[in-house]
Length: 316
Image (cartoon, rainbow, N blue to C red):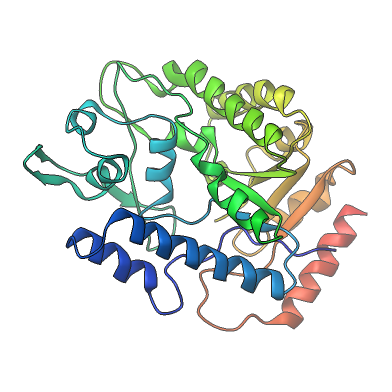
């Protein structure tokens, strides 16, 4: 048995990220200094996880503002009103996050919406009719390379294409399904870059799978991953879910050639029953979610050990 972390709090033990970004917004520090703070915070987080015995340490879970905003920027989902400002990359990103009022123009930020059943709010990506989704750069691997320079192997984390399409807001005549081909090319590029850079595991987060899914939703999910997983090469893909159970698509998850599947045994009310009734594929690794990341109290390890024993018996 090994220990995996889905993602690590990014704010900093003394709220270093908050103070650094606020200083940047006030023009008290420049982009290079902000990047230095980010680099330092990521290094401290990976070191803490390694020293605590974590075997699957995430990278690319760190964000300057919001993970879904990061995904939109990574996929070139940058509406024209922000691109037309002709700001630097980091200021275009922050314009999408906070809006911009200055010499280059006046635009509002993305809409905010509640992130599933948490008190966190994410920035809602926008899909315009003339938008071409594609992988803009290898920036999602920056953390992976930095951690490897410290002798720490990480699993890069990206928001999955299914969740991205379900949460994005289409602003024109097109629907989310009109962007499927583009997003498949973009995520195929992600897998390709991972393989070229020596990534062993890629974590793909698909929390939307715990929602009430229609037959069309399940068909879309299958279409996306049947295509993508044919192109994973040497990269092992972990499909990670959280905030509930996957009762509407458990069978389809198990049938697809993922190397690992992360299931929520805390908030997933039917997760244990699903595994017990249907079994778990022996050719995959079960990443069992057993610690409540939203709980402010210490984990009850007696309860966790009992859950582990139960999940192991389901998989035998």
